[in-house]
Length: 204
Image (cartoon, rainbow, N blue to C red; front, side, top):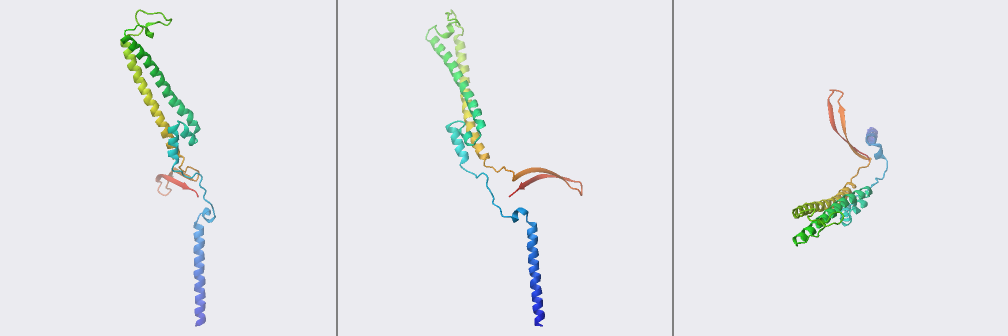
């Protein structure tokens, strides 16, 4: 009787051990191959929360410096071209405004020696090339253009700061080959129905 109990105990123990070994083998088979190997996860670009603020600060100090900080060097000529164009139009409109304003002040003072009283060869004219009313209209026109040019230049300067800040934010997103999101279209072979969805692939 005792021998039968011992034999039954040994058989039961071996049976349980066999079940545990089979369960571990099945778990190993379910795991992907990559999970069974020791690996080190390498972070390509560590996230820096202060990077966008730095890029915006650099662009505020000197336009284009934030783009250089983000290593987007090809944007620097665009920044200077845009802001330089705005500055050019502002300076040109301001110069023309001052011309007509000085001539208008001279007319109001009773003088007839402003630049519009002379022809292209420098000869004195009896009637000016631009009337006093024309000087008033020209002042309004160039003053308006000067203000618009200033607003556009300030807007481009602010856009330069925003661009550097947004670029620095986008550089911190993980867009490597191990992470992808793509749409998929599948046809069910049983009932010929179709389905549309998104597939997320994540490799470790």
